[in-house]
Amino acid sequence: RQSSGWSDADDGVGGNGGRYGGDSVEEIAFRTSRPQQPPASATTTTTTTTTPPHIRREADGAKLLLVTLLSNKIRREYLRLVSAPEHAFLARRVYEELVSALLILGGFDADNGNGNASNGGDVKSLLGACCSAAVAVAVRSPGVMAMQQIPPHPQQLMQQTILRGAPSNQGIIELVQSCKASIAAHLGVPLPPQQPTPTVIANSFAPNVALRLLGHIPEEVQSRTDWTCADMDAVLQIPSADHRAGAGGSAANAALETIHLALTGYASIGVTDGASASPSLESRDEWLCESLKTLSKWTEGCKAITLSQLHETLSATPTTSPPNDINNRVPPSLLTQLLSLLSAQSHQKQWSTALHAQNSLIHSSRALAAAISNTGDYGTSSRRAAASLLLSSLPPPVEFLRHPLSLSQSQHWEDAIVALSDLAATLAREEMDDVATCRMVGSTDLVELLLSLQSHPVHAV
Image 1 (cartoon, helix red, strand yellow):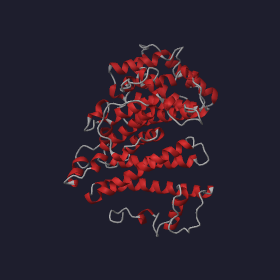
Image 2: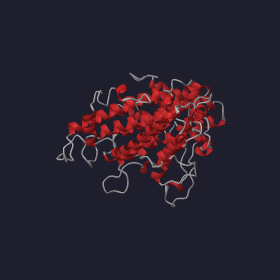
Image 3: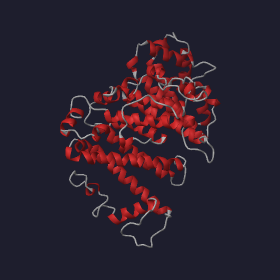
Image 4: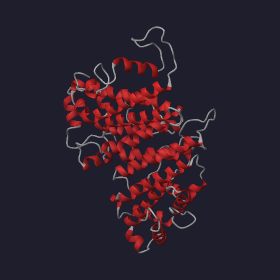
C-alpha cells in the first residue's frame, strides 16, 4: 500500500495517524467477527462472544465509512494501479477482498430478512457499499482472467486492453456472467458452457447480491470521466472477446437475460420462512422489486435496450428440468411480464405489503418508459408490434395503465402516479404518428387517459 500510493494516511482512516487508531480498528474487527483468538492488545481474559448494540452500530458505521472511502479511491486511482506491472498483484487483491466480503454479507443480509431485523439496515447499507466498490473495480479492470495471468510484458497487455482506442469491457462481461450464473444456480437452471470462470469469483453470489451488482453497473460506467458518451454506450453494447458471454456476447444482452431469468423464477428467490421449504411472501416480493429496479437502471443507463428488445427477450436456457419445473414452461418476454404488472392482472397477486405493490408499479413504469424513449429501433416492425401490444392492452379486460392508475389514486401513492403518468406521456410522445391518427387499437383510450390525468391537482400531464 505504501509503495502504490494507497496509504492509510491518504484516507484519514486506519493506521496510527488516522482518525481511527490501530487499536480501535483491531477492537472493532475483534468484536464484530466470530471470535477465534483475541487481538494482540487484548488480555487472555477477554473471551466474551456478545457485542453490545451501540458498539456494533459504531463498528458498522466505521466499516461503511471505510468501504465508501475505498470506493472513492478506486474511482480515482485504480486505473493507475492496474496499469503498473509492479502493482498487478495488489490490483487483483483489492477485487478478491471485495468479492469475499460480498459472499459473506450476502448471507448476513438473508439472515436478517433483507434488512428488516434490528441491524439488518446496517448490513444492507454495507452490502450496497461493497457492491458499488466491486463494480467500480470491474468497470476499470481488464478482466479477472487477464489479472490472473502473468504475461511476459504486463505493460503491453494494459496498453492493448485499456489504453487503446476502444474501451475494454471484459471486466464488466465477467461480472455479468458471474451474476447470471449465481441466479441460475439458485434457481437450479442449467446454463450453456461458457468460458472458464475466474477463480476469484468462482463461488456463487447470493441472489440479492447478484441483482445489486447488476444494478450498479450502468451508473458506474457513467462515472468514468475518462470516457466519452460513445465509449460508455460501447462498453455495454459491444461483444466481448468470447462470444459465449450471452446472446450477441454484449454485457447488455447478458444482463437482460439475467434479469429475465430472475423475474421468471422470482418466486424461488429469497430466504426461507422458518422451517418452510419455500421463500416467504415478503422475500419473494422483495426480490421481484429488486429485479424490476435493476431492469429500470439498465433501460435508463443503456440506450441499446429498446422496446423491441424487451419484446424479443426470451429465456435462452435449455429445458432439461423436471416436467413441473419453471424451465419446461415457455417464459413470457420481458415486455409481457411488465405488461402484466401494469394491468388488472396484478390485482390478482397477493402482496406482502403495500410498499412492495407500490414499488413494483414505480420500477416497472420507469423501466418501460426508458425503453420506449430509447429509439434505436424506431421504424422497425418489431417496435411497431411491441407498441401495438401496449396500446391494444389499454381497453378492458387488460386495462394496461388504467387499473394501476386507479389503484394508485385510491391509495394515494403519489410516486406511483408520477411514474405511471410519465409512462403514458412517453408512450404517446414516442408513438405520436400512430396515436394521433388513431391507426392502432387503443390510441383513443390513451388520449382519454392523458386527458383525465390533466385534471390531477399535482401531477397533471
